Length: 428
Ligand code: AMP
Ligand code: GLY
Image (cartoon, rainbow, N blue to C red; front, top):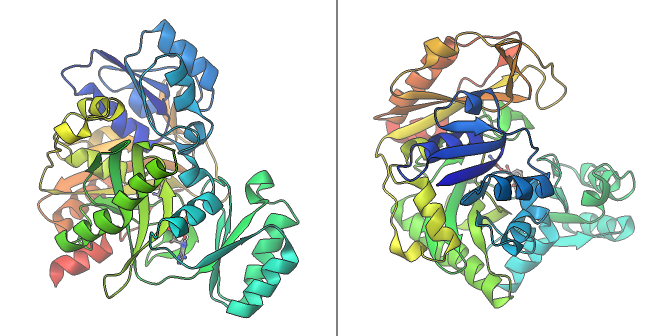
């Protein structure tokens, strides 16, 4: 069969790499892909952007694609699954309506409130004076979130009331995020340890993937500005078996049932970003209607089952018939980014040492790379995710960093402490 992966980041490289290993698959297309996917056996890049939904539909008809899997949120929120379904094309992901769980913070918070799913206390506003009254009444610290998609930049943690008010003004008055910021959600600041819980959902059945954790802050010690993720590992030791059961019972199942009750059946990957308090209480920080990036890279390194077969079961409502088999080892991925990211950064620097980094237990997934004049050059903020398997967190981390140290380009940077929480738990 022929499979199409929509997107061009590290997550999509991992999906394409994994899909190409399926015995059922003769060809994987990636739109638009990157330098990494173009070099992958059995994978072919197609020069169509992830948000060009009409062109992707046309490609699927033309190439007789049997199954499409969508990586990023923007096409999902834009309705790509509805467009594919209307033409009888199989596409694993949520409909436009269901993708609002990620596409609108207000929608997701109201949904959680309605269905008793634990989350931070909140209110939403579209006028500054009302928001100001609320901020002064509840006091800082607070978290201010633009309602719509803001490429990971729409969340501000305000230590002081005046910072919260400034963030509200940026959204509602200065239109900093355009229409994505015409409503804001203001919520309680939560403390604890974050974990990513990603499942496959087919409308009613839930198939959890292995647990994972990412590092959102740019700098060591989880400091500095928020990014899309500077590294990730799987499993996340904070998610014990008891907690896993609790997350399914209190968060994932009520989410899937709640959506069905509201008449919006949810199919696709469902990602709950969780905050786990010291006493083990779980609250949902956010939903994503897709797999995480970079969490997918270590998760798929560990997946022994056939991803394509799982997605086929997902689109046909048969996830109850399958189980996922995991490599018991730890996988840990270190993101190598362009200097300046998540702010402005250069593009076009040649990347050296990729061959030296490769080994049986190390896979370098590309994100912001392209081929120019026969050379692999940087083309984005997050450039690579160097992912390694190891018997322990320490082993996986050592192998990943050994590979990282052999890759070079001008102004490359990365965190040197990916996995520190898991390592700490391992040493206990
Ligand atoms: P979100 O896009 O809603 O997940 O927010 C991005 C990041 O902001 C999260 O991964 C957390 O690190 C942080 N964050 C979001 N909401 C809260 C909250 N209520 N309390 C503390 N941190 C938060
Ligand atoms: N790594 C966080 C995300 O994919 O949203």
